[in-house]
Structure formats: structure tokens, C-alpha cells
Length: 129
Image 1: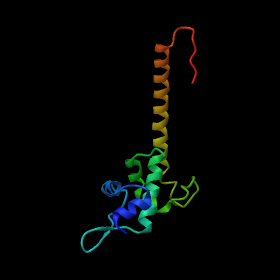
Image 2 (image 1 turned 45 degrees about the horizontal axis):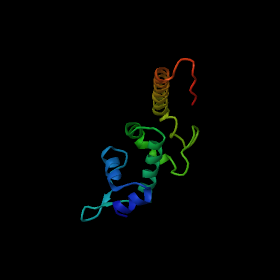
Image 3 (image 1 turned 180 degrees about the vertical axis):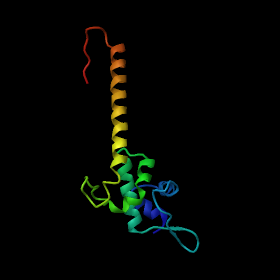
Image 4 (image 1 turned 90 degrees about the vertical axis):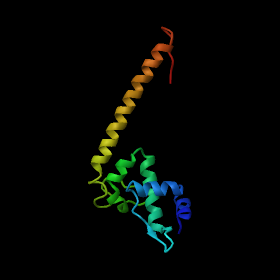
């Protein structure tokens, strides 16, 4: 299928497919005699996995670091550790790094919220949520 059809099937845009290819998340696809990109079901499934990982908070760089193992993941259910052999053990450092970064950002935002709340709340008046 052509890039527009593949993008629609994966729930994204042709521009995103070209971006994933440029960044090394998606291998260069086969091309027709006229140079048009050709995608199959495997590539569409891979794009869906990439989109799931990005939606979970991983960065493009994180996914690229694991790009050689994306074929081990199933688009319908990303594995928990102990899933397909090699899919988790070799990506654990990437996941641990992202979780650490998310925890640091949550702590920073929590502190920022408390500081802002302290500045706008009159003394003795509690604001919840």
C-alpha cells in the first residue's frame, strides 16, 4: 500500500511515517519503480507500536534506542517484563531512564504547584485539588 493508505491504517499521517523513517524508527520501505514508498501490514503494525510507545511517554530517541527490537512487540498488547524473549531485558535501561525522568518532572511540577498556591492563597485559607 502507498504511504497515505499505510498512514491511515496506522492512525497517523504520511508526514509522520517519513519522520519515523528519517529518525530510524521505521526502516526504509520498499519502493515502486516510480520511487513511491510501499508499505505492508508489518510496517503498519510497527507504526502502531511506535505510536503506543510515544503515547506512553517515551521519546523518539528512546524508541530509536530500541528500534532493532520493535518487531518483538505486538501492537495489540505491549508486553510486561517476562514477555517475548529479549523484548524487555534489553530495553529495561531505556524504560528505567524514562521513568526516572518522569518522576523528576512530577516532583518539579508538584513543587511549582505548591509555590504558586502559596503565592495566591490568602493566609489561613485552604485550597484543595
